[in-house]
Amino acid sequence: MSKLADKIRKALRYDAQPIGFMAARSAPGATMVLCGLAKDARDGAELARRGADVVIIGAGGRAAKPEGAADSGAIAGAWIEGEADAAQYRDAGFDFVVFDPDRTASTAVLAEGIGYVIALPKDASDNDLRALEGFQLDAIDIGRIEGALTVRRQMELRRIFGLTRKPLLARVSGDLAGPPLQALRDTNVVIVAAEQGAEIEKLRKAIDALPPRARRRDDGDRPTPLVPAAAAIGDDDEDDD
Image (cartoon, rainbow, N blue to C red; front, top):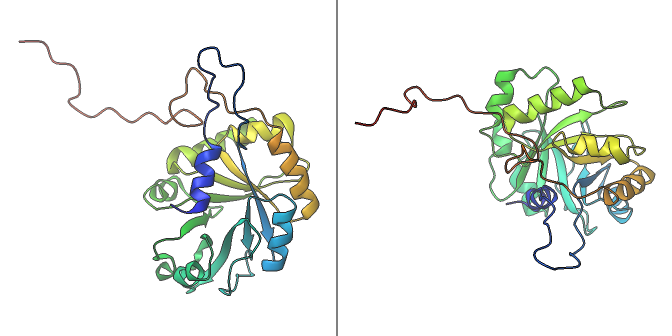
């Protein structure tokens, strides 16, 4: 398991209720992961200093160089494309790689011992999304979310999650906070990303101020209800002999 996957798993934990007469509980951890989008390792170290849990070196059109992860204390990922070998980035100290499926060779993402995040194509069909469920992915990068989160946008995010069963990463404004940020969190967006240090600082405070995840009555073991599986033929109860 990559460090990013472990960070996501911890962020998805529900708030544990005190047992018996316990008067206090330990301070809850952050319920979202904050990602800094960096141009290079030096920029990544600065974003980590400003509060990012994770940094991604490089972005679309500016692939990272496998020269070593940012020595920043944050989990470091690299944007790759073409025939870049994920094993090179793993050996250089990167924890995961981010790739565009239209611009990255299939042979570039075969290495083990490193995490993978896919940048979702805008024209991805339902069949494409279903296919992603079988891939070993830490998260899916859905791109930037502009403006207010509408109910229609929530429906779309739930569709993506329901068909892939993967946590979502979204690029957001640094001004996102309070109920709008919580609404995004409750729509399976576990990672929020920004480029500027000032935005990272704002989002750090906003994430830390979010209430713990609370299990709803209709929830299962995931942050949102699972899509029910179709009943198999012949599962009807039979009469007793």
